[in-house]
Length: 481
Picture: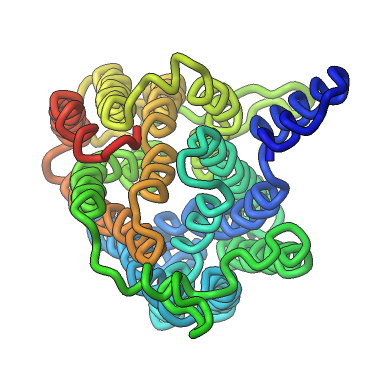
């Protein structure tokens, strides 16, 4: 279209206007991106709100509003739940590709997850826990891979805006993740808790946190279903692997075997998948071992203006990483879209992200050292700044790997396998969370210091290995960076 206008327009001012218009179109983003941004924001509000209180809900006693599960078992439950949340997208992606389409799958998944949150709210028993978590796992399988695939499908192959778009989309994920623990922390600790005459909390209102998460999920779907037709058109309505008989050229393409280049690109996805396991196994300690360490051994007492002395709820620390994401994601989005950022290959970005994650754990080692080692005396606390610095550095590492991984999968995956391979990418988090759960469960026996050190050294080694493989992986990607 650009060449057409240039060849048929003799007026210089008109040509200049057309060129500037085209540049604006190519450097901006479609409105559908921002609809998916807000849809994912509310879904993440629901998930991270629940996740922020889950380990506490499991380990607090019955009288405190919890389920009185010991920390080792609770860490395993947490790990298996957060793991299977990333396993079912493999199935949900396949169903979307073959039968449902991405758009319908997102709605189905959202309402199943809302039902899961309501179950956790209404049935405060072990049965209610397992039923609610099961529904959340199933619902996420339909939702997670398909909304990420839709973001990628907003852009044509080779469009340099795609990495930037995923950084913006990732900011939506983390805006919801930032708000949820803050709001739900207030609900469970201040508004719906039961206190004694001196203000000490006797019972936490965890079930109302699950209710708030369900309401967030509902609000997101109202927005999505109201505006999807306007801003997404027909995108994602039809399964990618199943087309009408009149579209013979598309049928031929859909049924054709993968080319050698496509096979190598799929292989690269699985290599990234392998390395991502170790990144997320370390990163997901935020909701388990880091959360338990914060609850026991971090000095959360601060003095606030107009309030005075205040103990920061443990749940609020789940908002620190998303806060840094919201602040830093626009900077990363601009950098990836710059000339310098576009020169960096995906293996370099992701390898650097792993190394940075490992460095982040050094600050937790500082917290352990400040307390005099892995001692059980909860009266001896470490500075809150060790934890904040850990989350800051981990966030930088995350922005180098996670949104970049989402983006590169949409670039490398053959169209007929797009959602399925997005499910494969998310499967790395399935394995990682289970591994992370086992790591968290060993803190009590090995000590937090050793666990943080082992994770740090191993992910740094993995990051260096990925950077070493840069040239090989780039060659197998056949032009995709």
